[in-house]
Length: 210
Image (cartoon, rainbow, N blue to C red):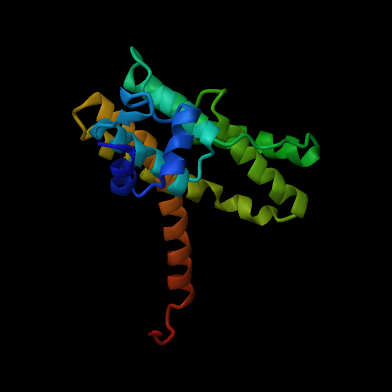
């Protein structure tokens, strides 16, 4: 297919597709002339993955390029590739090394140990959690810390459901792609469901609005 058809089927503007090609997110098509190329179903599928990661998952172009590089790296196991892609999807948080950061880091490590979770020291989610907790410490809103064990239990259930979904795939590439895309999109889904549930609970006992 020509780039115009690729654009139409993926619902991505041609200039955006050309940008993804320049940035290395999308592999080049098969050259048919000096200024024409043909694209296949693989390009269409990858373009939809890119669209999901950037448009829905909120990843930057740089992060998406790194994630795709891990997804399509040859000779890498599904577990290793998924882990590297997950790390790439975690946005580094700036750190202010004050008393709040020290307390938050200690709290994060104590929670992981209390839960008995086997988490690599390099996992960037450690830093993300500590950064969020440091904000609570700085604001003096440490009452929310009591919710962490309950949040952790809920997160564990979600993670088990995630991995159960992935394990049902039989093709290693599809398994990896499912893991990566659902990690990015699932974060947004989970956040949206939390807000919907909060409103539902807030309105319990009140007349329904239409």
